[in-house]
Length: 412
Ligand code: ADP
Ligand code: ASP
Ligand code: MG
Image (cartoon, rainbow, N blue to C red; front, side, top):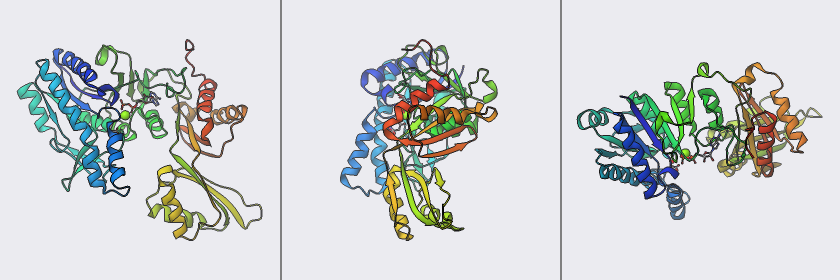
C-alpha cells in the first residue's frame, strides 16, 4: 500500500467529462489499495474570470475579499470530484483549505503555507477508507480569513500536503506528459526529460516554465518530496506511465550541460540616463524600490566615459512598472528615465554549466547569428538570462534549443 497525493490542474478538470475521467483514475489507485489525497485546481479559465470580476468592481480591491472570490473555483471542483467518486462507489469527501486547516501567512493573494494539520484527513483514510479531495490554491490565515497562494498555487498545495502526509509520491497531472527541455507549445522539437534535478527545476520554474509553481519546487526540494509530472489525458495512472521525475541530482545519470530553455514576458526595463557616477548611487536608486516592495531582477550599470555620469538599466516585474516610476519620482530620480515593456527574458538552465566553459558564449553567438540584440545579461551558477526584444522570443528559444543540442531527433 502506498500513500499518494495526486494533483489535477485546470485543464484536467476543465469540464464534467474530464472530472469523470479523473474519478476513473482515482478509482484505479484506490483499487490498488492505496490511500489517496487529491488536490484540484479550478476549471480552466475560471480563476481568470474571477480575477476579472474583482478588477471590474474595483482596480484597487481589498486583497482579503479578492481571496474570498478567487478561491471559490477550487471549491466547486473539489465537490464535483467527490460526487463523481461517490457515483463510482468510492468513499470520498471534499476539504477546503480552511477546514483541514492549512494555515498561511497574511500575505493575501500570495500567501505562504505555514502549517498543515492532517490528523482529520488521516482519520478519513484509516477509519472510513475515504479519498480526500482538497481544494488547491488556498488556506486560512491566522486572522481566520481565506488566503490564496498566488497563481498556479495548487502545485504548492499538493507538494505541501505530500510533505505533511509523508506521502510516498506526489503526482502532478497536467496537460503535458512531463517537463520538457522547453515549452513544447513554443518549440515542437522540445524533448521530455525523464528526470530533472530539484535545483534545475527551481531555476526553470523561476525563469518562466509555468508547468510547476516556483514555490512548489522550493518546497519539494526542501522537504525532499519525490514529484512526478504526468499527463492527465493518458489512460494509465501513477508509476505506470512515462512522465518526469523531479529528484535529487545524484539520481540523474544522463546529464546535458544545458537542460532547459525558458522565457518570460513579465518584465519591464527601466533606464536611468545620466545619473551621477558617484559612490552610493546604486543604493540611492534601489533603496526607494526596496521600500516600495519592488523586486529588481537584472541590473547593468555602464562605465561612464567622462567619469561624471552614467546610465543604469534594470528590470522589474511588468505589473510593478507604474509603482517603480512613482517610487523613482518620489526619490527625485525620474528625470531622464526611459521605460520599455516590449521585452522578454530568455534563460538557459543546466547544472552542467558549473563544470563546462563556453556555455554563455554559445548563447551570445547563437543570438548574434540571428541578429537578436541582447539588452541586459544576468547569471547565476546554473543559469544565464538575457533580456531581448519581445518580438524575437520564440526565434531565440528555438535557436538556443538547437544550439545546445536539445532538439528531439524524430520531431518535425
Ligand atoms: P495546470 O493547469 O495543469 O496547472 P499549467 O498550464 O499551469 O497546467 O502548466 C502546464 C503548461 O506549462 C503546459 O501546457 C506547457 O505549455 C507549459 N510549459 C512551459 N514550460 C514547460 C516545460 N519546460 N515543460 C512542460 N510544460 C511547460
Ligand atoms: N486556479 C489557480 C490559478 O489558476 C490555481 C492553480 O490552478 O494552480 O492560478
Ligand atoms: Mg499550473
